[in-house]
Image (cartoon, rainbow, N blue to C red; front, side):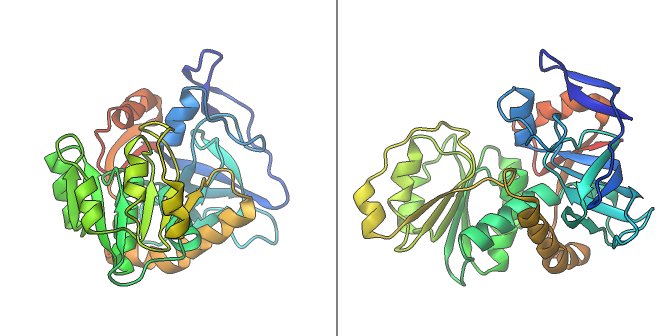
Length: 318
């Protein structure tokens, strides 16, 4: 088979690699589509390798059809599926633990299906499992609201009845996130989010930005607030008043999805399939696909994310 590997100089190379060999608990998926994530950009830059049990090239979510399955598998050859993977999605085939694979509804195409597993698993993991959910009227804070994770988090928070504060960097992105229900939408280039957070203290924040303003915003959390860090795109240093943390019983939670066990990821994927996939089918949730590229144009696809041009997901096809 072919895969889009990284050579010694971390350049993409579409080349022949060995076909995956299925273990007893795995299935082989013939990949039709794979979505692009910021973790892929970090891996391309040499700073976020796949876990050792996964192929050492990019790709965290795929869709396609089952090519091989065990005799006792719930899947059969030809089934349409999507999967959350730990790496190696940029390839024609991939071996995946069966639990991390779910069937695709008939109404969902491969491109949409590939855009769901990683960002929606991230949101479910952090808003539901780490934060313990939100209740009606709570305030949720999510920067980068037009990113794949941002769009998913806004929708999930609104499902739970929360008010949403988010930041964007263009009028087009502002208009889109407002349609999804975001209550306070600020252009971080020209507007200061701190007064809005002070007036509307968040119960939960999902933070992929970090940076110097993080500590100033965290101090305005409600009593018992949960601030979840999943990345530090604006820098890894800030100043936090620790007295505020213990007095208000604020929980600062570090979280990643990629390093979770296959069992944890399987449970999350099946929760998505059971609880959220029906909402995608009826249109109550959307996984907006910003652009689609053939796998051979992976550099262009990565460029869209690097320049923060996307509203939602960028997907590669095979």
